[in-house]
Image (spheres, rainbow, N blue to C red):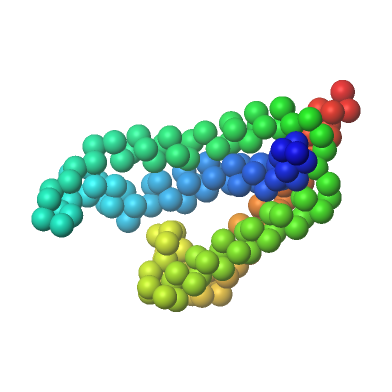
Length: 158
């Protein structure tokens, strides 16, 4: 029962894992605003009258984002069947469209982007630039799903 679900979900998981590491380190980790926020948490913040210090914020950020690409490649080596073409298209495209729509909804509701890089893109290129940026991320995710399928197909053909 679990095997078909794993095979169907593989293209999405592969794409998200491969997107996670380079997008985080390329666009988020070194973003000046995020560096300030992490530094603030490390130095301590006041929450409900209590000073809270989080010395492992940097370590946690790396543990959450660094393994993504490795996990994707290990999964490609372990999966026992080839995902369908539908799984490579519908799953990743639907998820990315949903997730990025939620990101836009959060911006509309709160006035702030979830990811500071989107603030930078909007300052530089306006909302059209943000839309183009989001479309590129979706396109790369869709392509990576097919790359995952190709890796699995090549390994299974050996």
